[in-house]
Structures are given as structure tokens and as C-alpha cells.
Amino acid sequence: MYSYSLKLQPEWKDDSVSSLHIEITTDKPCRKGEDAFLRIRNIVNIPFCPFQKDPVLTDEKGVVSCHEEDRPVMQSFIYPVVLVADRDSQGPVTLSYTVSPRIQPEGFRSSPYFDLVPEKGGVNGTGNTFLYVFPDLDRTVTFDLCWDLSLMPAGAKGIWNFSSSGTAHKEDFLMSNVLETVYMCGMVKAVESSPVGFYWFDTLPFDAEEGAGRIVKLFKAMAEMFRDKGGDYRVFARHNQFPGYGGTALTRSYLFGYEKNDTVSLDDLQDLLAHEMVHNWPTMDDSEAGRGTWYLEGSAEYYSTIVPFELGMRSAEKTAEVINRKAGCYWQNPMHTLSNAELGRLYWKDLRCQRVPYARGILFLSNIDAQIRRATEGNKTLLDVELKLLEKRMPEPSDFLEAVKFVSGLDVTDQYEHMCAGQDPVPDPDAFLGKFTVRKAKVRQQDFQNAVEKKDDGPLVDGYVWEVRK
Image 1 (cartoon, rainbow, N blue to C red):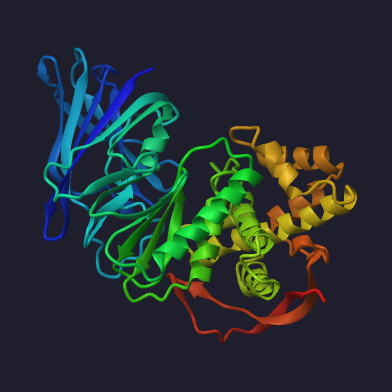
Image 2 (image 1 turned 90 degrees about the vertical axis):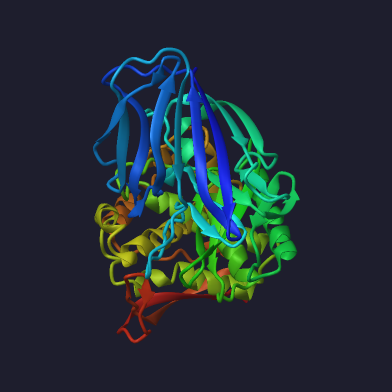
């Protein structure tokens, strides 16, 4: 197993981080003409950070000349570039370069929040947009991280997903997780309650202590529910330059973004974080866009709806509102008749197509849960299916069908195929724990384009509405 040692040296200027010097040292040899390192030139229209100093590769003999080459696009939205060595290396090699945090252009709306963005107090972002890694992202390495804060003010901190101490050591660490984790440095403010940490700069649009308390309560309940194997979970907050709040789920973490004038209620924060928190556990192969999105997002929507209700963190009345917003919006979306494959092809091109899998997933999974409960007289639930799938590193949709049959004896293949084809579901009357009734109703179709929600003046269409069961 090769080593991958990362040293990060941020530089302070004008109340923020102006540059980040990076040194990557490894015992993995570079061979002439072979791919030595990889970076992501562009991911979901977010570019790699600008270079202040271009990459230099060195070994025991000195500089190893190299050049960059583009490689085929991955997952339709990731554009990799590789660094190719022009000679064989001797001994350990070090790749050094300096980047500037990205200044988001006028009118830009970041989704997901991968870019390394500065603000008053510091900088944070994911490795996707500023780190070189080995080309084989499924490779495991011995990973070491060290923050050099010698160019920062007194009191500055360097935080990473798995460490708030300024250093980290991980054995058998996936190369892809070097990219899909959050790095934060500066005058960091924090609330920590093991194993959960919450970190931000400057000011927040809600009470930090109470927000952190809700995060801790939700995570501990979900960790027990999904039989988490243990480990840290961290939430990072950042100030964006555009209105609207949201975030991105990453490896054992969540990156929350807000604009300084946003009004964020703790209930809204709780719902957002609960959804993203679920992404720590249920997974499914989605390498072919749309194949597993319904499960990934549907699971997050379902458990972020029922868990706060079961914990007493949300009333039945508020939960009905959440169900109507998450599941009821299915019929309001003019793209809801598209198949999962069609939605996958358009996912990053049309915001409406991004929203359908969330609603389709929660409708399908809530129906399956109700059927499992009836078939097993309440002894089994959807959670038993989810736990069965967690035994696999990357389950397939067929594994879901097999798990349902194993847990309940039910064959839901036809329902699954209808769901994938975009056929309208009929909500199960016992869905959502049997605590709510559902009725047919006229709902107003809405249109969401270019990340801007249009005025609610669309035509009335057939849909459903949920209410608290009396």
C-alpha cells in the first residue's frame, strides 16, 4: 500500500485566506509515459482552483519533467486531467503547487458546494477542486495530513472531515475520499460533541448552539438506527455570494451554504441536515445516471421526514406539511412522466429533472414500507431492507428487490419497473407510519428553470394531499 502525505499551508491576507500551498509526498513511483497524478479540471461546471504556482514534481534526482493530458469524462460531469511523467522517478516524489481560492463569478450559483471558497475568517471546500490524487480513485492508501499554519494569525485552525487537531493519519483510506471530504482553515468557530462537530466563520443566520444540538440528536439517532460502525461526523458552514441556502453531502460530512441576508429557521435547517445526514448510509450504484438516484435521494427524503417526527422534533401537523412538500410536489412537476433514465440524462441540465427522483423515491419507498409492515404484521419495515443492502459495498437495484423479498416475501418487481418507467404511483393509505391520510386533490403545476422558482401560476392538475390522521 502506497503512502499519500498531504501538507497544506494557507496564507492570510485581508481577513481571509488568499492562497493555499500544497505539497503531496508519496512512495508511489512515477513511470515514464504513465499517469502519475490526476486532478479534476471541471466537475459539474465548477473549475479547479486557479494556479498561483504551477505544479512541480521532484524526486531524489531533482525535477521530474511532466505534462498534462485530458482523460475521458467520468459520470458525464467530471472532466479529469492527468499529470504524465517524462521519466522514471527515483525514491519518494513530491508534487508542489499553489492555488488561489475560487472567487465565484457574478450570477454563479454553486450546486453542489465543491469549490474552495474564501470568506471573512477563512476558506473551505472539498478536495475535488484543489487536490491532485492518484489516478486510481478506488485505491486505498496510508493517508497523512498536516496543516502548516505558520502564515496564519494566532488562533487559526485547520479542520478536516476526520480531524480538528491539525494533523490526521488514516490507514486503508480510499483515494476518492481525499477528494470527497471538506478542508477548512482560518479563524474557525466550533461546537463539538463527540462524534459530531459543527464549524463556521463569522456569523450564522441561526443560533449555533441550538443548531448544533439538533445535529447531534439527529445523528446519534440515525447512527443507531443504521448500525453505524462509528466515526466522526462534521457539518461545515460557508457564506456564499448568491441568495438561497442549501448544501452538499460528502464523506461523513455535510457542507452547508447560506447568503448573509438569508433567513434560515432551525426547522428548515433540521430538515435539510436530516436529509443530508441519511446519505452517510443507504447507497446504490448510480454510475449510469438515474439508475440509483431514486433510492439515494428517496431514502434521504423518507428518513428525514419520519425520524424527526418519531424523535418528537417535529409535530404531526408539520410533518404533514413536509410530506406534501416532498411527496406532493411530484405531480406539480411537469417532468414527472419521464423515465429514470431520461431524468438521469437531463439531471444537470434541467433543475426540474433534478427534483423528480427525490419525490419519486419517497413515494415509492413509503409505499414499500407500508406493504412490508402489512405483510409481516408490523415485524419488519423498510429499514430492514436498507440494513440488508448495507451489507454490500455498492448494491444494485436488483439487490433492493431481492432484499424486499427476503425481508417480507413480497415481489415488488412490477412496481419497481413502473416507477422506473415514470408511471404515476398511487400513494398507499398506510404509508408514513400509518399516521396520515391521503386524498386525491387538484394541485397547481409549477415550473423550475435555471435555478429560479417561477411564480405559482401553472395549471391545476390531478395530485394528492396528505393530512394528519384523526
